[in-house]
Image (cartoon, rainbow, N blue to C red):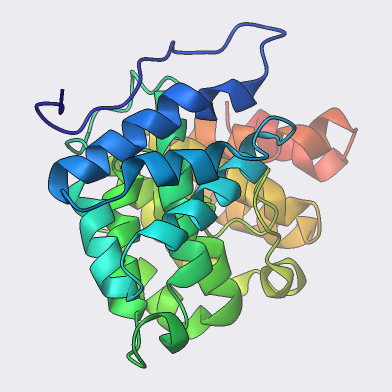
Amino acid sequence: MAPQGPTIPSAPRSIQKGTPLKLLLGQEAIECLAQNIQYVDAHFPASRFCESALAGLEPLAIMQRGLHIAKALHEFLPGNYEEAIRVLMASLTPEKSDTEDLGVAGFFYLPHSFFVSEYGQHEQHNSGNDPFVASMLALHALTMRFTAEFAIRTFLIQQQERTLEQVGQWIADPNPHVRRLCSEGTRPRLPWGKRIASFIADPRPTLPILESLKDDPSLYVRRSVANHLGDIAKDHPDLVYATCERWLQDGASTDLQWLIRHAVRYPAKQGDARARKIRAAAC
């Protein structure tokens, strides 16, 4: 029986210790994904997609599974990228603005994210037309269901200037998940994500983003800013220290003081005198 509307498999807030995270993208998730697409596109070959997505899935880790399933989607969705992404986005569950009950069910959308990053940059997948705008709209939609922090990195690597311009427009978005993407997606050394070599070498292009979000009303966003600064501190500690000291001199709020302490916690633990002084001043 066809579903009444797009759904995602239920998942706990956190996966039990010892349980492989990859199991979140198993047969149940693949079949649910197929049903969701078939709900909005009756011609989608759900059975053939499932067979392709399940083939060779077992040994793959969670990120590898996301990419594997994305390739199966590419095989059976329309060949034109914008047509395919239109179908895929229509199959999404409602967006969310809550940042408290995140859980791990959102990993269901990891294949969607990989689909955009793999096929959403090049004209060859889009009948010769530039797919950038369609891809940015898709990332905006996806980050309100799961996250687009992994997918946006390929755009920052290959189309940095125009992607940063788009990020600059999202900084004032009313949804905290979108604002967090601006900071988290541009981190130089995002865990699990592709490293952005140009930002590791010179992080200054992302500093205006952090300046704009340092006093964000959402702790979810501010924590990302702190972690982003922590990334930068691994390669350019003096730049981070100078930024934090300036914020303190300008009269940092209690929330911003927490962000500053969080940003320099690792070098402080390693005994860096300047980082320890900053943490002490931010109390």
